[in-house]
Amino acid sequence: MNLLIQRNASILALLVALMTVSFAVLPKTQAAPSPSNVVVVNGPTNPVLTRDTDSAPRHSFTATASDYTFPQSFDITLDMVTVPQGKRLVVEQVSTEYTRYSGQPQLTVSAGLQTTTGGVTTQYFFTGAFAGFILDGNNIYAQFVASSQMRGYADSGTTVRVTVRRDYGADIDLVKASLSGYLIEAP
Image 1: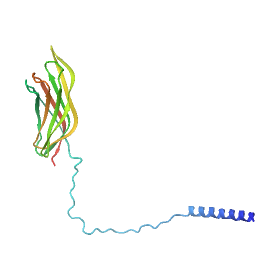
Image 2 (image 1 turned 90 degrees about the horizontal axis):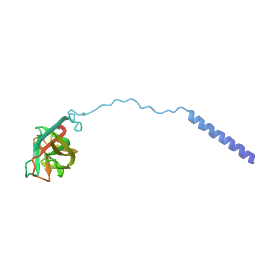
Image 3 (image 1 turned 180 degrees about the vertical axis):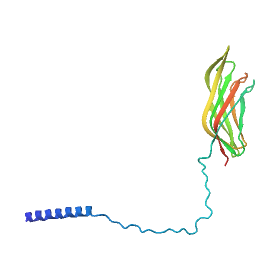
Image 4 (image 1 turned 180 degrees about the horizontal axis):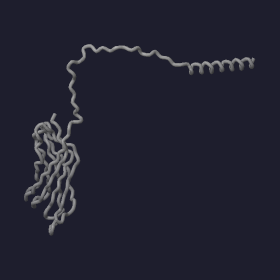
């Protein structure tokens, strides 16, 4: 009886293998979609206008200004630019240089950028650092710099200002500022 069971099991395994192979080699068929015509009814007669606001044309922009501090004043404000009508200024970099003519580095200097957007005036602050001495002929000057990469906005018709503050107000010293960014069309 064992021999009969083994023989039947072998035949069964052979049949299963043959069926598996035959299904694997049969071509697969699927119903192909029938071609159809598409008819648009009541299509838009006034297409929606779109505007790419992420890639607005950019016009490179830089500005510089300089002035002297006065004795007994602790800060100086430089008007950098008034943004042209119909434009918005995007400020990406601001740098200031403070040159102390007495040559003494014992001074703390800070700077700030002032912009107005949507009627809100905002001041961004950044700290200055002693950069070294400048030798000009027989004179030695102390140089301080403050710089910041940023993203600030200024609306058309508003004035962008840089303010430099010092902790000692007895000298007449030179302050320079520069900013760079780009102008875009005002929304």
